[in-house]
Length: 273
Image (tube, rainbow, N blue to C red; front, side):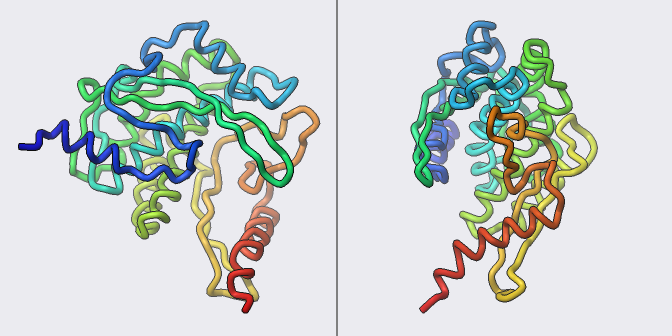
């Protein structure tokens, strides 16, 4: 006989890790620290390590990076579960354990180190349902993060609304990524929009949206882009003023053109005989 706990554990074990080594390893149990009881020394270490490659980073940049990583680390498995019919409907920070680790990366001649978090879920503090209720999901996510957002705000001064918008951005991106992987991108975007673009929680974001962008010269080539609502503060990196494609400081035209260039590099080569 398979118990519910066993079934959930099997589901967790089968979840995709879309970002390779950057994806969280997920298990049942407890981690190095609990999100409900994060010691100040651990928080300060996590903040410093969040921007370990950004020499001269200020505390607000560290805060933005850390919250984005903490959010995506949990969003990756929770959204993967949602799209398989298992919705978080009640949440508490005590249900989430964290174990940090570092991953090295190389890209376009650059290299570095990035902090990531593996996640341990304690089912005694988390409730799941087969009923699709995006707003209730958002309320459960808010309940998990409200204490750590308060802590990070107190230490760094980055505003709580700004921190919550970064959480929304990470979860929205997870919906897009997992929806693309499962071939249900419209459904995934619909869930994310209802959860985070509808008033009712601190995760509500006015600017967060999803744009479908195609190539004028090849209208059959296109993809969805999550336009973030919060600022990750990457523009404040010392000596690195470049804006990323989804930066809130970039206007719609330049964002669209940059994404079209990505589509050209990625997909036009595939069409070349």
